[in-house]
Length: 423
Ligand code: HEM
Image 1: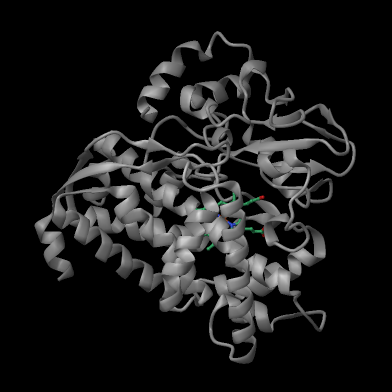
Image 2: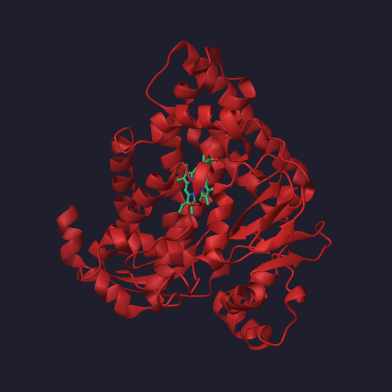
């Protein structure tokens, strides 16, 4: 089913349903519901919602208003990430990487590992990587445009973030095919041809691989993230082996699908809003502001979450110690109290204080890099494409966490002048 059909099917009954009947743990909900209509109702009728227990796990809180979500992202005194930061781990009750991997570590240890890693994420350190992103994006897009049609997701967008993360980590060219194969297996536990055990094994293989690479970099450090982690010290002590490998892996987990889904969703939005495509093409909207709007519009990570460390009040509701609280970025990014005409895709939108990259101590470490990738894509598309249109059914991601498309067949008409400028 295409997302357009799903929206049409789901839109009609959203207004008549009990809010308790929306099962936010079920990936199917996002395929069959007009989610933006649903979130409008939550924001208006029940901004702090107690989600009933489901087959996936116990009850949890659902925040849908921008201000409440921002407050919670900031409040690492009352809320922890160490018992999971997305529904699947929060409902399970724990995250096996807690206390070691940045996103699921709190307090001083989190701050120290983050400070160490930030060295590799400053715009200056990323200059070379950013140039490679631009080159890679141009090559992939040029090939696709010259062919006249492509699956924009599989032929173009899929290849950019993962290759960029390999550049950042310093994974040698010769190992990339092997690593990418493992990563696909690790992520596809729900597909017919990969069992849950296969994907568990693949994840372990990836961690073993990073362990060996870290060992090599400890002996011969170079200018990459693995070397920073392998040679870094906190209070005079080296990082643990598992801290090193898990934080390498976390870049793949955090930076691959999010950036990819934003690029794909951005191109789909441009096809659906021809006036915005013209604004981008004619330079009436800058690529920089277009990037922010694409990231707001697509919100690839629909939610994040925390667990309360003590009894605390949120927007007048008492949350008990141990309760799970989920923060719905998808809803915050369309909050009518914050954004003018939030349902309008407006590439020149300003201000645009979306929460797609989170906020507070865990604010996305890769935000600059994610923006570089989306910027490179939008700039490349507006340069070498004259017209872009849908060319077959799309395939949505099946998840209660990620939102976007796995497949987006498109047909291009080339901008010959733009192409000539690159040759
Ligand atoms: C954290 C979104 C790209 C690495 C986060 C968080 C969000 C987010 C919302 C906060 C999670 C929380 O509060 O629990 C996004 C989006 C991206 C993107 C929407 C692209 C459009 C990237 C990239 C990388 C990356 C390219 C790395 C190469 C990370 C890491 C963290 C993180 C390591 C954990 C930071 C911490 O806990 O201190 N991301 N991300 N992300 N992201 Fe991203």
